[in-house]
Image (cartoon, rainbow, N blue to C red; front, side, top):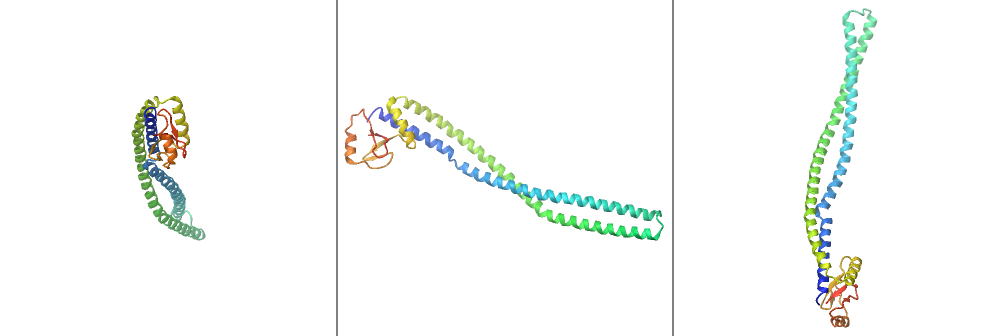
Length: 238
């Protein structure tokens, strides 16, 4: 069968190629890898925020302890200076001051021990925080690399789409209006394939075998008429 049905198959080939190119853009392997990395990145950022909050809380507790240590040391120094100055001579007052010095010393010691415990608690968190930050930086680099790869692939495939679209327009311009309209309707309804060849007794669109009587009828149609597949309703080019 000659024109316009050979042209119709050309248009179908261009449409199939365009569908495949667009599907390639949607199904780039880098896309699924990027989605996985972005999920990991989101989870890691949440974990990083949680550890950072814990470290900040420990740092705040340490700051408060340091203030208490400094206040106890200052008060203790002031009392010891008064005791040494001779300003206080009554033994009862000196004894009370001495007791307060010992209390302040014990309190300062306890604060210092609490601070050491905090530092020990903070050490593994600092290590975990450093690990999370290193992993986050590596993930950021990988995400940037994949996005760049996707953009490059989209540009390359996009150029092929532009070329294929131009070829499709040229071929479609040679189709009779009625045939082109029917093709577009069937193609939209049947997943992108509106025309197929009759290969032997089989429709190359749905890959089903036609009855022999129907095959004979199609083969004896006038050259300027078209047939449709009784199974899938696609235009059959024979």
